[in-house]
Image (cartoon, rainbow, N blue to C red; front, side):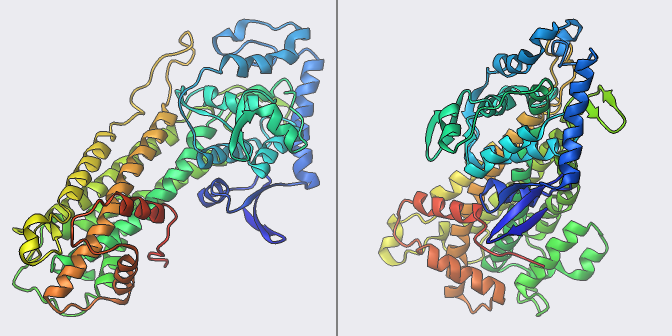
Length: 516
């Protein structure tokens, strides 16, 4: 839960329910992480650590504490070697590859892991929780390779880089440069942690990487949904389209709430209570007429996917579960990331379909056969110079390329289960791959949106030059803002700088869209 501490906003980690917005705020350094110091919370955490210690003293058998890991669970570890076992776990899992998670993604992962361990069912110490909280506080970010997790038995390999950093091993990013973790810890007065017997498993045997990435993906998708709706409204105006396709009575008879919400937003943007000026054209093409039906799928699925992601975020998802209150060790499979895998596969499909919708809208806008009087390729050049200027011709090609790649990325990762680790992990979720895929689809789709912002600025301006149009206050403000940000394309110029500025603006949610 988010609260205020002095002048700072903080996300409180006390075992209570956190939200996707909390994780995004931490990931983007808009809040600080605050670990509860209440007697009740600290006592519950300590009880788990004490129970594990008591079991060890009584020579109890605990998977991953007095035994080997995974298929090696039948191997008993001599008592004098038990303390070394957690360090061997993160050592041999240091085999990740691929690009490192970026800073925001890394903070999301640390936050997700801390949230899970704060449930008090993992048998860890307050010292471990404080060490993770300190990494977030000082922005000491483990360099976590993005590839190497099958998403069941948790995100073992990527989370080994968190475990190692807590113990002063491997490399981190700190103060703008890469350095050994021990150096960064010393720089803020911290000491490397010595993991207690259950703590290696507790850090690594969970779903923090996929869940952290899923929180970031969900929020980006929610904003993309709003922006796609606003862009559709601008494209209806630019195309001299029929706003009555979004009539309230029409959508009352197909009661998908998300679809109805998108239609209501379009009605508000288009001020469509006024009589249509285009009664001669009863039906626009599908990419305009059916926009609520496409964007509405994404709008409808977002609340359901929020539930899946936030339930995972607020779960104890390692193994075994340490129930100190009932003094039980429960062996199960809570590290399995199937819900996140499904959520990410579903989200990327809904997002890519929205990108495809906008790609089709742009194809209509640049084509004189379908744009109802606008110049070819939305070029603003006139006179004899019109012959050598090409407007948004190449931009439309790039949008088509990004859309095709986004659609190609919709193959579900969750159906590609593999059998690993001597057939102990014989059914796995692929949740982390699904989350990475979803972020890539979002990246491509945001590039489509950035291009559509340029096109909307161009097309609405050109429509206004050709006929009298009245924009709703929302569209008028949006168009004015875009005119301030983007110069009208009259003479051919490279648009990559404009695209990058629009991407930055999109990803920082610069425009307030449909707040109600």
